[in-house]
Image 1: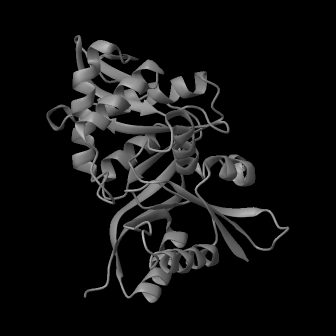
Image 2 (image 1 turned 180 degrees about the vertical axis):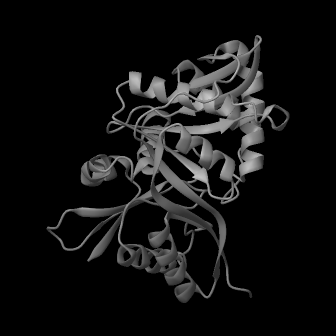
Amino acid sequence: MTWTLSTSLDGLRLSAGGFLTAEPALNTVQLTIVDRLAKDGPHAFGAGQPRFGWWREGPREPVTGVFVQTPPFGVVLGAMSGEAAGRLAEVLAEASTEAGATAVPSVQGHTQAANAFARAWERATGGRAKVRERSRLYRLRSLARPEPAPRGSARPAAEADHAVLVAWHEAFAAESGAGRSGAGRSSTVHDALVRRRTAEGLLHIWEDGGRPVSFAGVSPVLGGMSRTGPVYTPPELRRRGYASGIVAAGARHALALGAREVVLFADLANPTSNSIYQRLGYVPVHDSLALDLVAAAG
């Protein structure tokens, strides 16, 4: 039973690409990170060198676990056993003592695996893990129309929407705590992200009376899967059904692109969004956990 660590994206794709695409919904975050690195290069998420790993029960056994890390962000776990996650924490904790080692500020993944990683990390380092967010992954079973139907309609984002979309990405990040596991995303990063996703046709806006009131993004179709997110409506425009409308529109777009599975995450601390997604036809897949890893005092 062993982890293979690597800084080679090609090595990850060659050794573990089949594992990731065999369960695309369960490995949705890893697939989208790998896709982004392949398109935008190793520093798509920051100046640090990304690292990857895959787990095998034996030298000739198939891969049954994958992690990715794009510094300054933390470790992202794919589908894996608690045993694999705990062993990974031990391996990374040992590596963290070396000169120039990559820091591990956080871990996120399926709840069982993330908890196993955190407990092993605490034992190995003397630090502590602090829960940042509990979320639930949903998979679309059968898309329902929003009821009642919101006023307005959806359309693809255009270059003229750039400024408002950058502002909404920043507001979403601040509200959701995205980026707290590493360095927060700068306006420059949001600017580039919005520009690229708009050009790819992956951002949609809900418009009411000619005014943009909500937006949602979808990922490219990877392994037959597309993930919706982020979804944002300014606070003063909420409770009017706009989020339901734009999430449904994003799902239709993903299905039109050929997605066999459409998934999304919802913060379990937000019962409104969880209720909205279930009314649209999304069903729970599993719960996920994000934990900040605090170094031992002294």
